[in-house]
Image 1 (cartoon, rainbow, N blue to C red):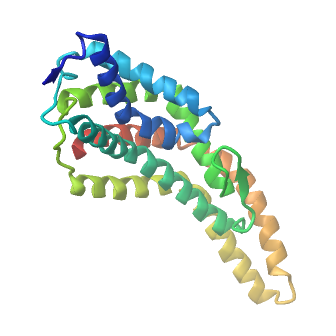
Image 2 (image 1 turned 180 degrees about the vertical axis):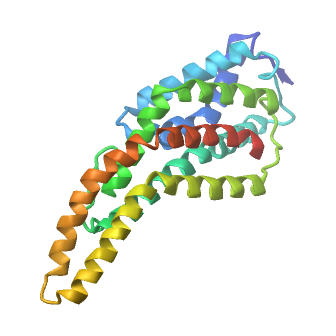
Length: 256
């Protein structure tokens, strides 16, 4: 039995719902979309709207063949698994950025001072939150959303609806993780270097002035260094942000 998405309206709805499983994991669970408090109904409506648009634009790639009565279930699971894979790039990107910020928090002595994120209902590092939200702003201010829609559309050409078998390039994924982790550390590299120099200076002073309260002095000096160096580090790393976002969007096609 063949369902033609561009023919009958029922078939169109079926294809739209199946394609939405390829989109929902990114819009509902992946940053930067999870960094902002967006109602779940809006996320689902956006996913279904994009799915309907792609079904209309790709009638040949949304023609599905059902070989058994459980064909739709198998296709839905396959589409959901594919959507999860496509969302991994953004998860790894923002996870690496948050980790780089967490390293800066520990180095600056802010490890115990975490802030509460109402959208995720979680506690995130201070510097990592600043870097993550800045990455989200840059993502939405550039061609990030358009490239993401283009990625979903191109995935239909490479893996049409109903293709329950596809390969996952684990070596490409591991290479992406290593590259994104190294580049993300560069966002906080200037700040980490400045804090390292402060640690060395305070360590030398503690040897020459043992009566000095190193802990109190360290917090004060490091706080001033963070407030001074962090804006400079952010302003000089915009190109690196763009490189990270481009790498994340270009990495997924190499995995499939």
